[in-house]
Length: 93
Length: 93
Image (tube, rainbow over all chains, first blue to last red; front, side, top):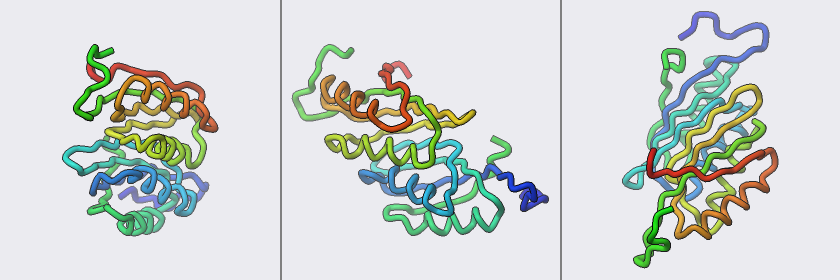
């Protein structure tokens, strides 16, 4: 975890999330909507793939601090069809 | 273009679309919603990235035939903030 949370100049951190679950119609819409509407979190990138009726999304988002990221992860866990939501360190991509 | 459009056994083709435009909050939600609600088109994969307030999405979808794909492309061109929508041959990925 970067030591200097949170940045004081109002800038954001890029954080990574890996989300997995059941491939249902509209699942990507639901996930991206949940992110955008959660404290106006901005999406940097999404890599979303489906196989055998499952999906995996690797998403990078802009967050103000660790609290923002953790609350976003908790929010995403509530989405229908979502099985797991984990952080990954976007820096060493 | 694969010769045997459309498949008679009701199966689908994987088709590729590259979509570019202005990075606005909710743009990924709008695009994925437009796809899913257009004749229940199913999304196979999305690679979405943003830079300098622009976005680029490489999307593969399941389509019944060329007509389904072309109408979907026309539909996506109407989305706010979308500048271009083009096919790409998903087979030689």
